[in-house]
Length: 156
Image (cartoon, rainbow, N blue to C red; front, side, top):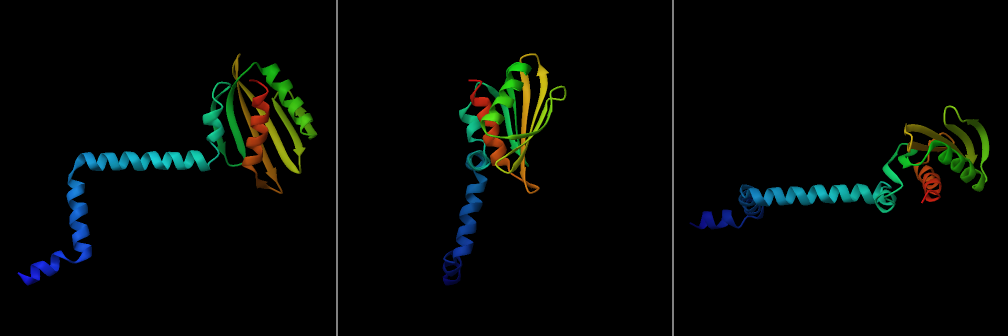
């Protein structure tokens, strides 16, 4: 009897027994996994640059920040968005290197960052706007995001 008492007081075995009993409860396991999944999604939204996408709903329908670029679908006509992109780059005192309206591409240097703005037509009222930024061959997704949202703010 003394041996059983000593075994039950051992911390790892008691902890193991508690988790084993909780794991048998299916509702507890489902609730715990849903909370964990929610925390992971919240963590990525807060620290991956998606907070502006959650705040600025309306003009931008799909937004992604990846690698060196910020990409989103913008509810606007091509010509309006094209002119707005050029105006915003001029406002940011960009040195325009290449403008190709037929391909929907502008290359510029803004604050020592190489910026590429690309427009693709999805339909007549929706365009895909992609802003890429690099500095010394290193990706600058936060700078791309800054330029992206400066362009989109004017559409509101």
